[in-house]
Length: 282
Image 1 (cartoon, rainbow, N blue to C red):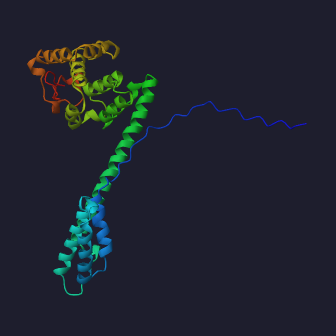
Image 2 (tube, rainbow, N blue to C red; image 1 turned 90 degrees about the horizontal axis):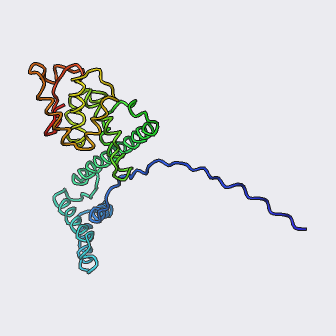
Image 3 (cartoon, rainbow, N blue to C red; image 1 turned 90 degrees about the vertical axis):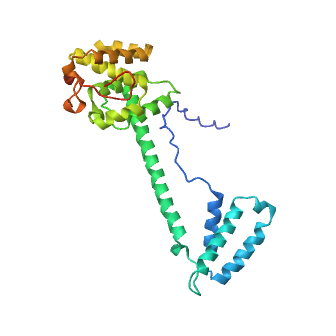
């Protein structure tokens, strides 16, 4: 009698969501740079006489067709020539050391700066991805209005748009427009509001300008009462900008104050803020 095979465990059907993949910036491949570094390692500890022998060998090798057309071959030969001239001007018996080479030290400093920039770029990409996850979760919970805008949310908007395959998240745009209109979050800073002109799209700027003027006219208006402004922007952004500019011109002369005079927002100040939109000022 044969023994039955043990039953296989049930297959797991639950799916796990994975975090978005973030491309790690890397140092670009440079054959000429690689060749120069190889020469420096070979030349370490060489005297002027030894360098002459190595330089002669490099010249002979450069005559081969495969090395003559390659980018690395000429770079190696040029580095041998440079190091030879460097030792020719030094005291007799001096040996080459990359640690005392001004050119090498300058390259190392540039490499360190480039590496720091790549690390900062990676940290910023991770921050944007994490913030995009947070806003996406609030969108799914229909609680996006609870998120107070932060510095860099304009780039997060672009990330959400990229994740959606180019579809512009209308509710995110509406949230940014409201924050810009009433100075929420980092938009309390005039510099942040000024920078928004180059970071947000014209429809978002027009929406913010229109909301600012509408809130000025009806300070106690709720978000649901101003929902028509978002529909108008979606239908015809230029018309929304024209309406905001018209309402701005219709203000009484005494209400056109400077932005610095009323930092609390458009609902109480009636101020005019420039955001680079040709038709509107918020």
